[in-house]
Image 1 (tube, each protein chain N blue to C red):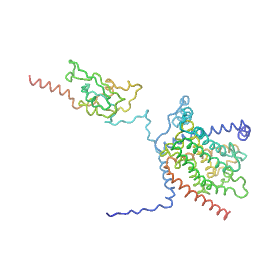
Image 2 (cartoon, rainbow over the protein chains, first blue to last red):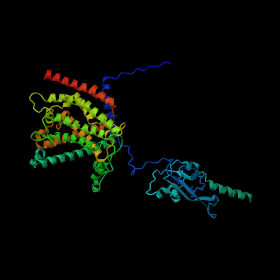
Image 3 (cartoon, helix red, strand yellow):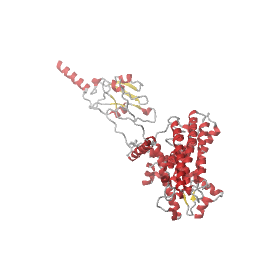
Image 4 (tube, rainbow over the protein chains, first blue to last red):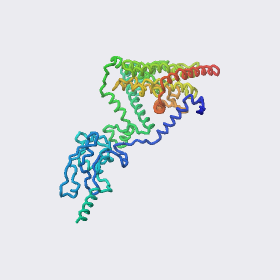
Length: 181
Length: 365
């Protein structure tokens, strides 16, 4: 194989004294002193959280205000650190969304266990559990660090939903029932 | 008033001596504390950060503009740091050689304090130097000799810690000091040669050297000596790029790895004390001391003394900033590079400069 030998220029006397490099370095750091600092003064200034950030897991409602979780417990089973604890419950027969049949009676996420892996969000067939923008989770007791259902919905809020799966199911069922009669 | 001030400076009676000692310790602790603040602030600016800007106290914080200025400038931080060193637990590891372990920080700090007392800060109206302890005619030699004793604190601390990293740090520190002491002593000899012309008394006295720079600073007349001396004081004070005894990346904490609380604080103060000594010596021998070019402060009487003190303080602050600036610019040399630089480059340079000065003085003089 042909080898091309690069000729290395020998260091000049000044370069061997280190001094030009040191002076150059001092110039660089001096210019840095004059530049404004990039520090974010954290508690007073907060970072802008990009959309798609995976922070604290939350529960969300659909645009009609229906809680999306149907307490299938897939997230509970997939959760690697076993941070999620769901107590399933039934939706009473007379309710507007009775055809969904199930909803969680209690839904606790222990944020002392959660590792923010996002598997719960990935596994959820209803797109009901989302890791959202909250990045700071603090509490003074262990109990405070367990997010209950009310707190999860408060954190989660409402996310846009283009499918509205259960509304379609109800309409479909209504249409089919109408077609038979 | 004037008599009292002069007594405070000169009187050999015990209360005055004690007062001088307290002034010295207070001043050194304050200067060390604010040097640490300067270090933290300057490193922050160089790295695009803000630096300490949170510490504040009640009462001070409530003063409208001054309060927030003190807080944002971090000016209360040194007090908080010092208080922390004083009040935190002071554990002594089980494996250390206890008497020497306790003694080492004291031995590190004492020479620094002794030399700082000898440094002339300004000239009194009658022409004598303003210093807490003006020292003998051989001022500079005594200062070199005593300040080099500081390394005993490092060596003793490293050895008494009875642990690998402090030991390595202590060995490096001692070797480095021996290597650079020689070049440092030789590099300033030309300055004495220039000052001690025939007929000049007290040629080794720093005040005489300062007076001898009235027309032109020695850094102009002896640039090579200034450069060698500058590199040497960086090495002597164990500052970057020569902080061999500490080398926190390869030796954990170096000689003070096993130290904590106020003992570590004393080492810290000693380091900054040596920085002040090195800077002061450089300023006195090469940068005109308490003089400014074209300004006759000596003719102003008492005001001249104050002006000289202010000029010296400003130069000292600038030089301390230079120390910090260099630290956050240049990475640490490897140990063998430090040794090679000391023995193969600086020592021959210093000798060559000395011989050259001899020849020039012999021919021209």
